[in-house]
Structures are given as C-alpha cells and as structure tokens.
Image 1 (cartoon, rainbow, N blue to C red):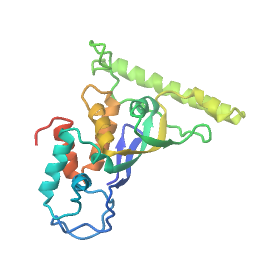
Image 2 (tube, helix red, strand yellow):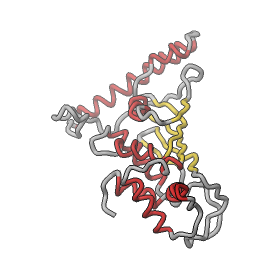
Image 3 (cartoon, one colour):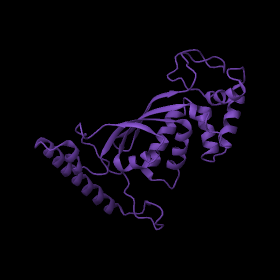
Image 4 (cartoon, one colour):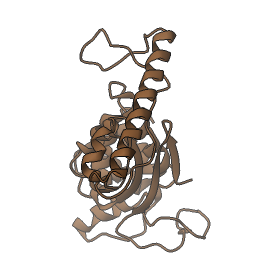
Length: 248
C-alpha cells in the first residue's frame, strides 16, 4: 500500500524512498526472504552512513546493532546520517492545510499550477465543524451543537459550488487563469509532489501530529507515518521513541 486517503478528497502517496545504497533485492542478511523490494531505503542506512566517519561501512553487524546506533544518533542530535534517506510524496490537500506543510522550508516541491490548468471541482467540507476553543492559543474543539455544524457545512458547500461556477464562467469568458482562481476558497484542493530528507521529515511530523496541531494537518502527518512504517519499521520506531516520546 503506497497511498492513504485523507479527508474527503485528499490523499498522500509514497512515490519513492531512497538511501545511499542501491538495492535490487531484499537482503537475506537479516533473515528476510529474497525478492522484489519497492524502495532502496533500509533501516540500516542511517547507521551505515554514520560509520563512514570511521571507515566502517558495510561491515557485518547485527540489525539490532545498527538500530542501536541510529537511536543514539537521533537522541544526541547527530542528524546528518538521517539526512541520507530521502522521501518523495505526492499530496492532495486543501490550501489552508497546505499552508501548515509549506512552512517547513526544507521541502522541495512542485505544485500543479492554477495559472495553467483548471483546478478540479474539489473542496473540503469538514466532517466535524470545530467550535472556538476557550484557550485562544488552540484552534478548535468539538463543542458545537449539531444544528450549527449542519448549517455551516451546508452554507460552505453552497458558497464553494457557487464560486467554482464563477471561476469556470470567468475562464470561459477569457479571464486569465491566474486571476480567475481568485474566486476559489481556502478549502479548495491543491496537488503537489515533494521531496524531503528523513531528518527534516521527522521534525515536520513531530509538530504536525502533535495533539495541539491543526486537526487536518494531524491527519496528513499520520498518513505519512502509516506509509513509512512498512518500509522503515525500525527507524519509525525510533521516531516514536525520540520525537514523540513513546515508550518502546
């Protein structure tokens, strides 16, 4: 599984996951069967990259030894070996949620451009409409009556549908796409491809899956974790222990 659906029209796709070592087949070194592996990156890449400091790459060590070194590196702020793994993901996300992602400036990304294409008829309507939190430092709480939530969702959908029609009308009348798109709302979906190293991705995830983060951003963060877990189980467990503070 390389795709996780998020929100009503969103998704995260794991496009590629690469480390410094090219791998065609699954190594039997750790007792796993030979066969096709979808990505090159491996739990042992971080430790192996770090060992070049002592000219100790590619020597025979146990999996547990490699994970122990990777854990030590992350706990003690030695992040450059973690930067040796690159992650490519493809994302469909509402604009206002994307602003929580693009703030992490270490991402390299290309986005579908509404200057050149017609954006699809897709906008986000929340399943649960949050109410204003008593603590102004937090964004929302699930504290609104159902009738107010239903009215908000109805009015939001009507407004988005109306203004999408205005967007299409402007395009049909010859208005430049870069101006016509001003009819669209912050909950309209955008589509991009991004690349980031694993160290900086962990910093992003540590902020965006935190319980105080924007709820929709949390869901995208958890989707990325779900996609990485099967391919880097040992390194993702270290992430949970060191970044999220979970016990092993």
